[in-house]
Each structure stands twice: as C-alpha cells, then as structure tokens.
Amino acid sequence: MGNTHFNNVRKRISVILRRSESVVLYCKGADNVIYDRLYGGQEDMKARTQDHLNIGLA
Figure 1 (cartoon, helix red, strand yellow):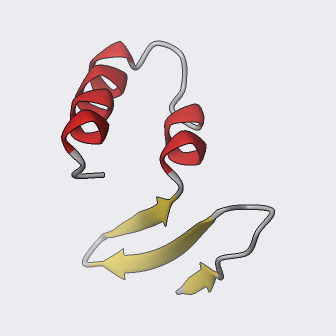
Figure 2 (figure 1 turned 45 degrees about the horizontal axis):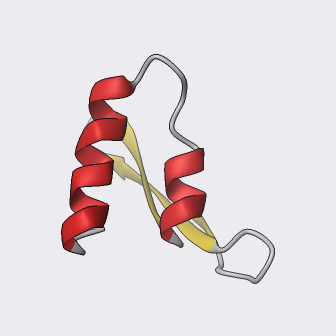
C-alpha cells in the first residue's frame, strides 16, 4: 500500500501492507527511535522490547 523511506531525520523505515481483511504496519529503525514510539500504558510491550534490545534482536 505504501512506504516511507529511511532518512536521517526519521531514523526509521515503515511499510504498510494490506493482508486479507487487515492493514499491517511494519517499522524498522534505530533502537531508541522505535522504543520512544511505544505508547504509555504498553509496559508489557516496552519490557519485551527492552529484553530484545538487551540481547540484540531488535
């Protein structure tokens, strides 16, 4: 459906895909940029993301 290219300001790339009846956003970028975009109230997701960052999987 669309994408936004990586650049030095955004420090991430995003791709939006239509999959069956849903729309999915995939985003890849600098660790701190991705982590900062997790919303408040998502402590479980933040904890799992931090675990992945600690072992180098992000």
